[in-house]
Length: 160
Image (cartoon, rainbow, N blue to C red; front, side, top):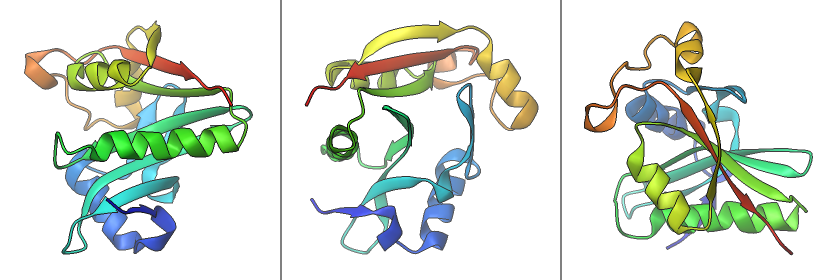
């Protein structure tokens, strides 16, 4: 599986991918408001050149935060490979911590990241209500009929 830097992929493909999977390129979480199409990241493409996996991140001081991760083909190791790529880069850049935020309904993400060494760090109660004021298209009900209310931060301590 070949992993590309997002800089190697036409910007319009990245924008289309985010609009299809997130409704827009805007990500609103308690750590900030991001235009995911402008962030650093990595992608996996299929044989037709379509994006089948995409991760974005930001580095602030000695922390690397994953802002988005999507894989359109589950169970093939795409998400794992992308997280490893960011983790390796963060280690090279001397980051001490890799972190991310997901929502309380995203049980698949909670399972995925914990299997890869992340631990639950904090719950930000009612954070999604605040995010909806900026991005009203965030649904009220998420995966498995669970109301989307809280953000959950997961962290992984990095060692050199």
